[in-house]
Length: 551
Image (tube, rainbow, N blue to C red):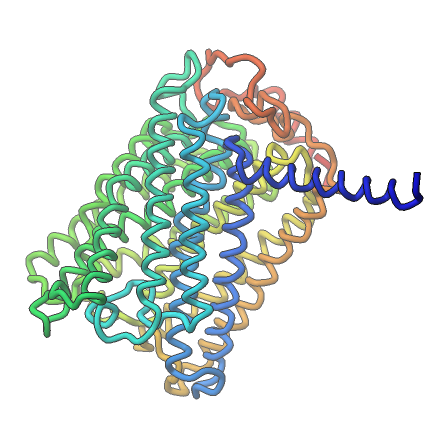
């Protein structure tokens, strides 16, 4: 035998093993592996959207447009908006945490349609490929809302490529929602009645209803934009006999419910975290469950509050304003009930809990300023100013990201079987909270003072607010980078987590960490209500734990 035969054989076997390992991931139908594929791809788009936002914030440090031209600035904030909205905020919690947890939480072996679940990830990646291709070849300058007739007729950028990406991604969202609905209806474990379901399941169920009912409307609107752009059919362009407000109605009929596609699953995460780390059943469980359904229904009735300064009638504006106040009620129910759950609870300020408390703080600010925007007279004053930008980010970005990071930290031991560094987790949660408020709170002030959004040249009196926002964005970026480092290191150096490191109730904590392929050795039978804690163990756990102590 030659001396080179053994190494060549070894390298061949190793390459074959690597290829088989890659194929096992790319063709998996295990919902947990698909969730991890989503985790990696969604985080990639988050970093890409974050880099675009960084370019925008650096440009705005000075009043003159000295880093980018006006056209490049338009393309950069559009790239940030498209990537963050369609490829991070909308799929983040449902696609990652929902995919991983829905079967585990209801005692199922997998989702109802495993192959469709894998298809949804491929559709997501396909849509992202179109959007990235558009960015590489010059980007798009319409803003993430694609308002007509600029997008359908006059823009010289890659509108069709970008819209195609969003259109394909919409099918991924629809298939995920369909899968969740069927799974929750048909595959619950014996004894798991509707009012024994975790609130995370209720939230994802309501979200899935929005996904399958609202997303097709956006698909139709985007398809009509492409038709008008390609064949000059008069749909939205007044010069061709179209109506530009028709697009706004179609777009916001989807995009306001889409806010709840982002925030409802996040609220479900917060219910789980608040309950576990206060060691109490969620106060008013039934009210929170039904409030998720109420938000899903009312969310379809308020799209017109995005159009107060359009040509819709004053009476329509008053009706939409009134319904906007109504939709705040179920959201307020959740916040009040979470607060009541904390009252006299045995609270542990661990990393997931810090993110949950941060969510409540940011969501309250975003929700209260949403009431301002729901009042016609105030909205007319601050429309298209940084006040809207700040409100938008407090609700959609702050709320979703805090819940996403809180959920990742909470279920990380279940996903990986490893614990992370609690001290660094605490630091990251505080840095993110401080950085976020420093970034976006000054924008309320400059928006009220009249600073319009989407301008890269502005009066000098607004510079101090932009400098504060950019400084806050730098802190926020550090807060996002820290978890990437210590969570990655935990995969190799983290302490073995055990099956239930938080002493939490719920079926997902009754199986191994990470769970086996089919989740449970035997189908579990549910005999208790949701969030059934054992007070003695909880009291002992709370007394023994201190910040930074091992878990």
